[in-house]
Image (cartoon, rainbow, N blue to C red):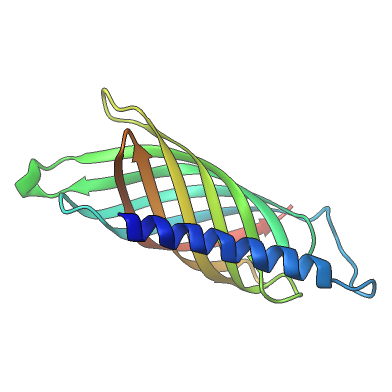
Length: 176
């Protein structure tokens, strides 16, 4: 787990460096449009990182406000279900993630490849479940037509215990 924590800290630091470097590099000839807003709907599927689970599936809504063409603030909420393997008792564990973060496009056009980092709370939906800290680094590609495909890790942490999944997010975004 220590290697994973170091990897996450490095990824967040790298994203911060990209954001600050490119924010300073923007020239006066590049117009910004801070009022662009989008609403997206996504499907998430993945493979859990803990042995007792077989797959993860969920959906989300993402509201995104563009600060400029390359930097956005996404606010995401949805539902995720982790299927428990039959040999571990079957059933499933569900939670509602509510996250906010930063999305940085590597192209000045505001489309194409991006990096995303989100964090927030995951509200357990099973009886007796509690709220966990949720974090989700991702990389992806967003097309001008609204399609978005990303690879992400979504981790849950509470009371020294960690769980999560590596997955794909396929989404479609609407301009508001």
